[in-house]
Image (cartoon, rainbow, N blue to C red; front, top):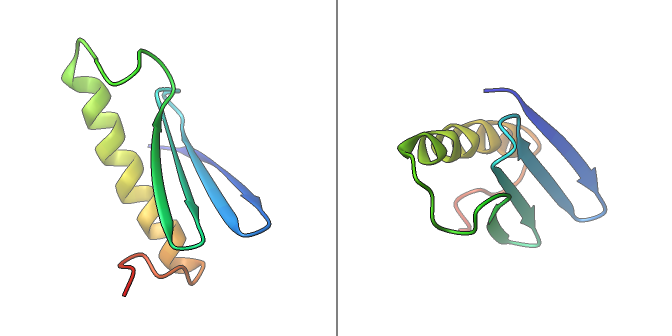
Length: 71
C-alpha cells in the first residue's frame, strides 16, 4: 500500500491511498480515524486496508525515531 505522509510540528499523519483510513501519531498518542462510513463497513477490505496502513505507518514512524511501543 502506498500512503501519504503529512508531517507537522509534533505529529505525523498517515493517510491510506485507498482513502478510507487515517492514522495520527503525536505526543505518545496513536489515533485511528475512519475517513468514510464511520466505524461500520460492509466489507473486510476496509479492515485489510487498515492493517496494511498500520504496518506501513509503523515502519515509517520507527524510521523517524518515534517510540511506537510507547515504553
